[in-house]
Image (tube, rainbow, N blue to C red; front, top):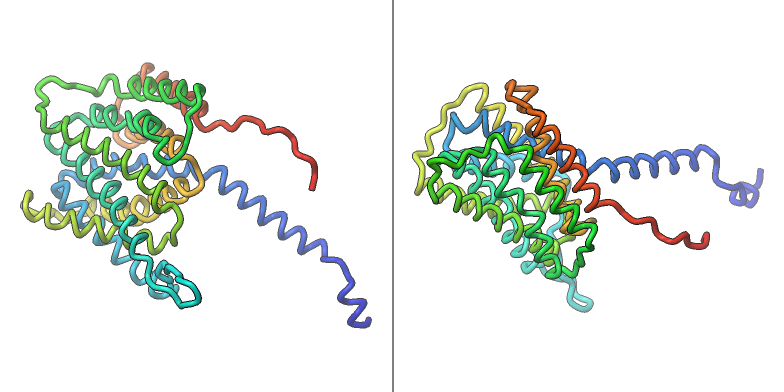
Length: 329
């Protein structure tokens, strides 16, 4: 067969099949990514139950952030991760320091302030249900400020946000004991609420697109630099090393700090801030199921009803309306 005949042959069916299969896998991954994020993110409260008795909150978080850096730094070096560059004319360009600064700010807000506030509040006596309820206002707060990143919120989405918050309230209703709770733990929960809201909007506005390896290094590096001195100043930094502590720390580093946060980065990059935040409504219900399975905690009919209401609210927020059929291209 001549070269001309060979070049004229159409692509094989096997190549088309591989491309179709690859596209199908990509579509499945894109569709299931939010639910993987919810599942992994919800284990945070389970980790707290194992880790909190063995280390103080900021100490544990400093170990978590430092461990994430120890894992990701070799990965970045071995894979030749390029630093973000800002090109100027025909020159080779310089490191994009403004982008790195934006990543550091969002990392401090989402990691150090949000997680540190929630963990410290629970350590000081705030019921986990109360903390979940206060932080659960985040999707509503995000929607209020969504216009900062140019995202209008429809009436259907507002209905979904309110519905989701009501569902979270039902899920944690039997765990929200506020008697004897001081102002300090509540203030820490409110601080965490504003930190996760501001961090999500800030990242969507200023640094939505970046290499995940670079983003992880910068954000957790900044969080580590902030958290370690705070732990040294406010805590004894004593750690009781046992199987539960090692397991909680390993899961926090690999699954939460690397896995869940990378998924959150991708969701913020490709989705509206309001839609991404609405997924947080599913965290308390998922955590309640995990606690029921692992620790035998009560799962009341009221909580079960709240799960359905929260899921309905999220569906209203993230559901895409059918677009007009375009002509085939």
